[in-house]
Length: 361
Image 1: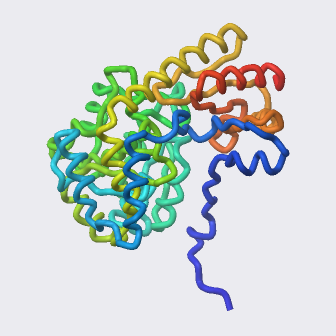
Image 2: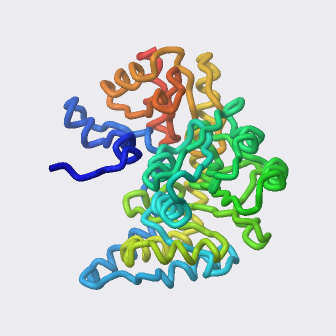
Image 3: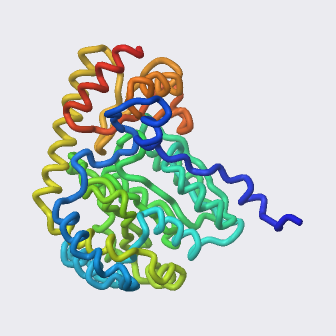
């Protein structure tokens, strides 16, 4: 006997993460491989976070704080927001899943930029809802195109700002015009996983819309700028009419105790955050100049990564780079078959990548 599984579940395409360093070294017999595929922090975790984790290990026999009180208070104080608007998640992926579970029913529609983070689609389809795609326009989210796709069945719009994988942003002016044009009952989710790296002062920020009466949700993560990707800790900030149902459906202990204490420490580690952001900016500028000297096209980015046009099959370039011990991300599955995505690493890693790119091209 087989269980009865809905077609919308069976049709899901599993999310494929970037290849781990250990797997590459095992498969190819390579030492000192470098990974520039998953937009991770090349400096490692916040030192303050690492220290408090060591201290907290002795308490692992106890369940974590199911309400995440201390972390929520720290986030609220850091950004001057109401603690009741904050929902913690096992990574911001968890917030995406909670939004889909709490807000969507079968047949509802959710508008997504195409391409964008693949887990949006997985989460939406898991709820029996329908993803509605809006292609990018000049590598940027097409807000006019989103407006045209709105119907009576639209429940949520996901916008990742900066956009992944292009690194583009949406300006405050364009966002406000967009909000004025869509029905107020639609929930607009702004995924700000890379917001700390943004250099353009005109970029929209979700927190600015918390007290406007509109259903705007901001999602942030400790995985990138704070270097805690392995702990899976993120959060959403939203009106209480949304945070309340999310807290009703989330797992009782969805954020582990080490993640909570590490995130509290990381929030106070301003020196490490600045060092991380400065490194990304310096190394992206170095990559831009180096690629321009080589006549290689790229898309400037407001995140910690960039798209590079290789004018060849991106999967083939990906595999050739693997053999040189370098992991990047082929953008074929994102609809960019001639592009690879590379995050800014340490300077010596970026130099090594560029030299390898010369070889494989």
